[in-house]
Image (tube, rainbow, N blue to C red):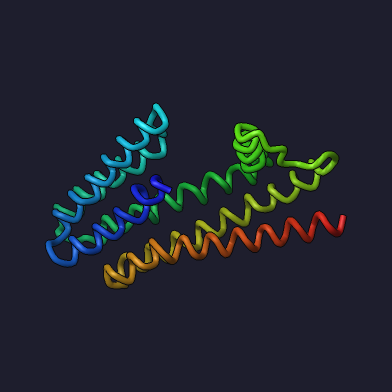
Length: 190
């Protein structure tokens, strides 16, 4: 919950407000403050900072500097799109290599929680589903990255912020529900 607030919602909202009133320089400062807050939160809550957090904030700093030099806030708006392209590429790579990355990650997480995720005898069905889901998620992130890059160049800062905050979250929830329905259907008809 706090990671979502620090890592996604707060930076987008702050950037949108500050960039609209004060320009990209202060917008970048607000984004970097949120990035530092995210790093500090992870350090104290997890005991370490994830490499994704470091990469995301390094990208934010680089694009922020370009935004300040050009005085165009759209460069900061491209950071989420670039991160989504990276996710799409990694998921596409895992799918192409027939890697069980998603299933393994879910199993590891549920094991930590003490939950048996896969019913006995259903592993092949889950492997097939999560392999196909890896490809679908890759397309989902690629499509959303293209849409948000287009929004960064063409939409107002407020409309872009709505897409990045509520739009991504809402569409990902809907996507997750559809994936759940596909898995339920597959389990019932095998």
